[in-house]
Image (cartoon, rainbow, N blue to C red):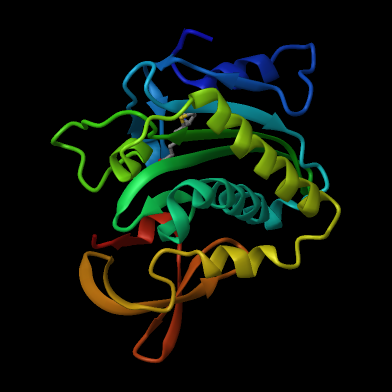
Amino acid sequence: MQRVDSTNNFLRKELSKSKPIPEGTVIMAEDQFAGRGQHNNTWTSEPGKNLTFSFVLYPVFLPASQQFLLNIAVSIAINDALTQIIGSACKIKWPNDVFYQDSKIGGVLIENTVAGNHLKSSIVGIGINVNQVEFADSIQNITSLKNITGNSFNIRDLMTGILEAIDHRYSELKEARNENHYGLYTGNLYRFNELHKFVIKGAVQNGRITGIDETGHLVLDIDGNQYHFGLKEIRYIL
Ligand code: BTN
């Protein structure tokens, strides 16, 4: 698709129509002019330069209380695919940013609907900075595959690689063969088990990421005690 406000919005409208859309339907935009990120942030992307796409899943097998397992599966899959291009410095920044050293290359916005105790549908939106080399001065700690490697990439080939990796990890999750997912997630987690400063409730504190709990909260060791944080409760200092 040439131009759309947000590929996530597009699929959400399709999902609300009476005719069901098949699982795995993918929408990619050359120019996404009102992309959305987590926390109600915007996601900006120079037209034609980057990967912005979304797809639909029906993870009805997942209890709503375990929905973070889908974030884990998607995050490790993107990490699998991009590590092949930029090596092991590719990391997952909790909950599902794609990082290289201290800069963001991409992000994921997963929007779930729930029916009863289980997930009903998920729109998984992924943005990866690919061939864009300049970013607005107002955006800090941001980079692209081209800035990292010096090379340009075919955007469709890259998307295919990521989708294949997600297909693999999603199948493992669906078939309950995901016992290694948590270890792969934490093993590739940005700043895992390292002492760093974080902003917690407005104050700077030293802590060490020790894991993720079953609800997807970040677990931090602060002075020997374990604390659990949601997305709005903690900020990294980059
Ligand atoms: C984040 O880092 O906050 C998440 C960014 C997600 C951006 C992607 S681009 C494709 C899809 N459509 C959107 O509007 N957002 C996601």
